[in-house]
Image 1 (tube, helix red, strand yellow):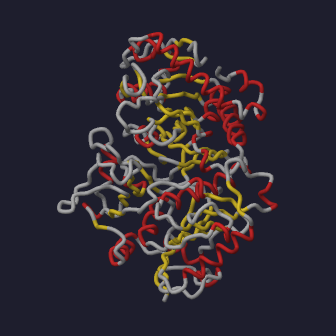
Image 2 (image 1 turned 90 degrees about the vertical axis):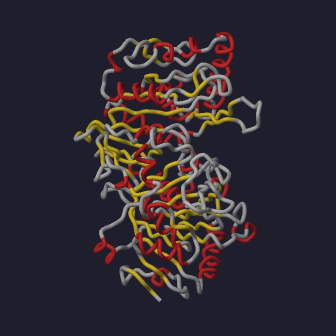
Image 3 (image 1 turned 180 degrees about the vertical axis):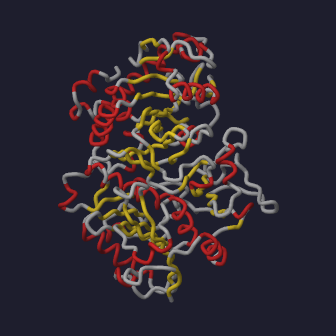
Length: 532
């Protein structure tokens, strides 16, 4: 049986997927929640939020992501970063999944990736779980209901968590797989309930398609000044650096929190919603995001809650530290209705430096910006055992290596060319540690970070005195109103100055060692900006 609204010429049968149980097309949020509850997929929580757990997979599986190796993509894909799959392996996987689907109920959502209609793609999402349909309705953009009657997808994604892949037969790494076939315009996801794979698959698609058209695809958040989309800022950053938090500034208009394009027309959000981390989320620090956790239809992923009161525990990370909520963009009061902005006036690269040596903000030249973009540095704490205080450096090129099908220089050159053409000012912002490394120092005060960002975005920071950092070569403000002077000079925040110098040299060497891989592919000006 078929339920819901769909183009009668574009049902699953028209795509060769037959023999299913009930198929529910384009159900809206209440119907999806009703279906998910009937199927026992989760719990109705406070305010009508939907609580789910995702089993053993509580995060992405980048090692299980494969690209099908065909002549049309052979010389474009960055194979060092993307596992290959043969066309024969993919065809076998597809045939086995379609067979597995027979007799089962499925949920279909016809959606759009990209707020700029000139560069958007139409995506059909076929999910085994009703709540995955709810999740992707939040995270992608929803066409008007009448547009569904003529909807034809550019790409189709099929997600079957109950199907286990066979590495010997399908040519994948394990029984979990995310396989992208650009020729067949199809993505297959199996044996993972983690919903983030759905949105990241679309991001990977756009990361491939858009740069080939000269459009920069960015793992970043973005906002603009009130009533002035021309004054746009983008925030690059890996998980835990403050990308979502800092862009959700009540004094600016939120374009989007995770994935954007930069075309000749300006910036545009890929998505229709947000997927925010909720660990230690507080109503004081992040009132808007916190409020979404008790709104109707928000998907609450892998959070512990009180079985009697349904109160969420924002500190209990026993299921995962990667607990999240997914909600539509309109749940944020200052979100843009169009999800469009101008050319970025300011580019912010966020890093969480657990070594405690980077300043809270630094100004970058275009060549330095490309260097830090290619480096994609942040750091995470090396384990939770007592006594382990050594931070773990993480270099994820372009602040999003797992989602990059093309070589990093493609994105780096696009960024540099667009900065040169449109004249953006670039900043490196450290939201990590100061006064010592992780274990002895303390986190950069969010109040100071916000004050520095406000000064950068309103143009006043560009007018203060700067000094050249002796270790990293970028410019650091000497004095900024509302920010303790001491914070601006990390060495002065350490009681042991020699320990600071040793730590700084250690990080310089890490940057230098990591960057060696890009040296054969980059221009002289970027080589000259290299650290170490």
